[in-house]
Length: 207
Image (cartoon, rainbow, N blue to C red; front, side, top):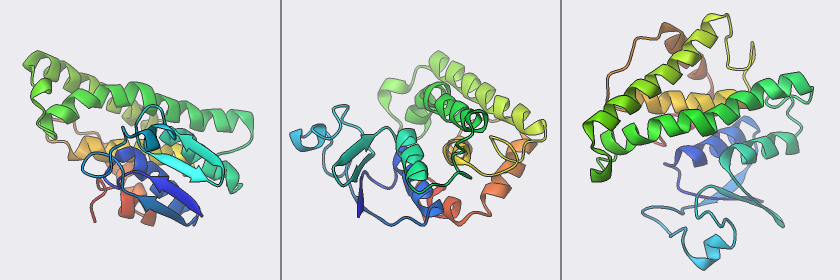
């Protein structure tokens, strides 16, 4: 049985939960992270020296980094619809997954910590305003991409790229700040809402 370490409210844990739902792949989950068992214990750090969730345990194999775990599970189950094996099609999926993990994640962190977590260390007005502009700009890139006739992030069909971008879209919509009206993203959201996995794990881990 696969074991997933990490609290269900974590956006990165929810990537894995949504992916496992798409795969009809059972796993057990243990709560680790803020409010639960500490990820800074020797026990956890032996699994992931970064001290972050999620961690996946599959027999003797231990994996961390949420996007890598999602790719591993799709490959493990032979799901070429979620992660193609043809090099060009696979690169199109992984390109957006890598962009989400680097550029997009870095853009929303200051805004999320300020507006949602109300962290005193993230209340500088100028930095907050700049971070909000950057987050909206990057979401505008997705809007422009969808406007080219793409129903989903990597093309005409749902893939792992939609798991990671879809959860990022949900975070953007649920964070209380001023956002542009992006009709393409609204249409994309409606398509994602047809998927039971998004309904289960999309809304910031809430039922």
